[in-house]
Image 1 (cartoon, rainbow, N blue to C red):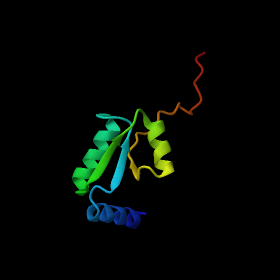
Image 2: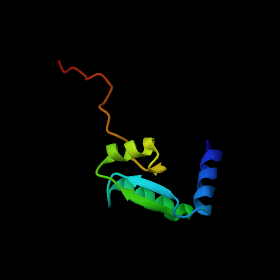
Image 3: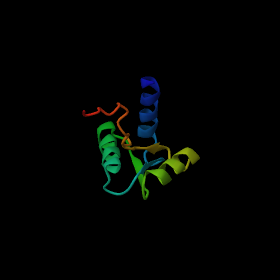
Image 4: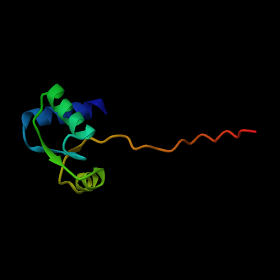
Length: 85
């Protein structure tokens, strides 16, 4: 897995501006995460903002963008509720 990620970073460094990076919107946490990754990895990607994660994911799966930074969705607690007696 790590080898694959390193290969992708190497490709991005060798081909600046050829990778489109999706986010859920301008200034969103996912956008900032992507910009931080670009800065730390030293790669050049084109930011493509969307109006939410759903359309960004649709384009990622459809091949219009190559990378997407997303936040973890909020899941309800799966632990049983304690009963107060």
